[in-house]
Amino acid sequence: MPPPIIHFDHATFGFPGVVALEDISLEIQSGEFVGVIGPNGSGKTTLCRAVLGLMAPMKGHLNIFDCACDELRCHHRARIGYLPQKGVVDRNFPVTVLETVMMGRYGTLGLFARPSGKDRKIALDSLAHVGMEGYRDSALGHLSGGQQQRVFIARALAQQPDVLLLDEPTTGLDITTQHNVIELVQHLHEELGLTVLLITHDINMIRSRVDRLVLLKTRLYAAGPPADVLKPEILSQVYGKDLVITEKDLVIVEDYHHHH
Amino acid sequence: MLELFTYDFMQRSLLAAAMVGGLCSLIGVFVVLRGLAFMGAGTAHAAFAGVALGYLMGWPPLLMAILFGLATVWVTGWVEEKGRMKLDVSIGILYTATMALAILFIGLMKTYNAEIYGYLFGNVLAVTSEELGIIAGLSIVVIGAIVLFSKELYFIAFDQEMAEASGVPARRIFFLLLTLIALTVVISLKTVGAILVFAMILIPASTAYQLTHSLSTLTWYSVLIGITCSVGGVLISSYWDIPSGPAIVLLATVLFFVAVIFSPKRQRQSLAAT
Image (cartoon, rainbow over all chains, first blue to last red; front, side, top):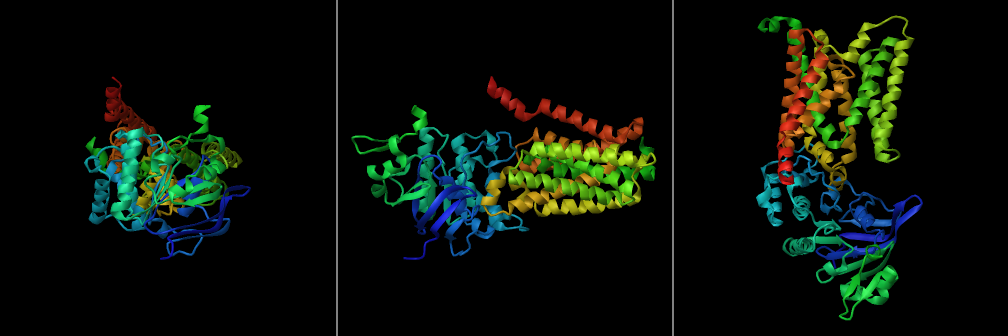
């Protein structure tokens, strides 16, 4: 087996006095589709920031690509296409769809280099991959939430990344759009051979699509094929009473606060 | 009116106004988009305190203005990054503290110094050839830096965390932007004055913001509006014999409200609302 492209080795992350992730050991191989699940506040976003090199481990090591450093340099970061948790896009921010996607080229190009026709073509191809090529001159703020997510995925693709890192890509979207976005991610994984790390609280949405699930709650509780991870005795350690398993063996993890 | 252009002082001041107007409206694009509006206002007052100290101690006023301006933006930038305090609070403190310093320095002077008030209110019609040279030199440095790092500056203005995550050295670019804001303020002090310089940074970009959805178009509109208002303001000021700073700023303000009223964005929103 080739060396993993992401390798957590007993890594602990956090801030002074606060441990967000403790003693994480995890190897992710090139081309894998990995879903990261866990309740709110379980350290999912911290894992994301760690992979991006925005946070160095306090203890242990984190190796990404062939980089032995525990803090990524900008050069490595450009090889990870990142879709941040959906913040509030200022609907009046004056930026077009193509200008947004072109920003995906900026980190890869590096300082001083000016975007060329080739970069423009890569950006347009990325838009075509997400089915948004017809909107290149539209204002980003005029698009729907699902369309904006597609544009941001296109921006990540424009980096021509090895890894696609998505933090809660379906939050705030309606059910149909949620499925469309996840289908798009699966399609990109298969077509472009991208390693995908998808962070979500919605297990049902991804359980049939991912190669492996990683279950987090500050510590790493389980990592393996969905069938091995989605067992009552494993999930109840993390979710406790919020876990409901129906007759059809369907796992439903409800957000406790929505219903009480 | 045409004979105005034959005077040396008039040619100098039109050139100075065009350069300062263009420079302020260019950096203004990033100030408005990155949400640093208040930062520039604070910097202008800090730079003025530097000028006052310079006159008090007999040190070069422009150099002191640069030092005070840079110190202010770096401290506020550092505070924002550390998240110790809300940005508007820390700038509000520095803003008033530096103004207090300026008043203190002026009060400590034994004699009345009219030149200092030139930096407070600005007078583009009194620009000397030497000052024009300084403005030109510093403008080339600032505009050169903006052109060189334009793609990174746009990216951090849009989303600094995203820029950092995709491999742009966002922190360093942010401090570069702060440095360029401080230099722009200092360059503009003599022509529009510490009180009004900030309008020159804010208004053209905000006006352009009303008119377009594209970053590149916004930038061109902003610079065009900035230069037009500055040159137009100088002409109005000499023709009707009114102070140049207010003429420029009020002309820009009128244009801003015209743009707000006729904004295509606003029309689209009101259409959607019906």
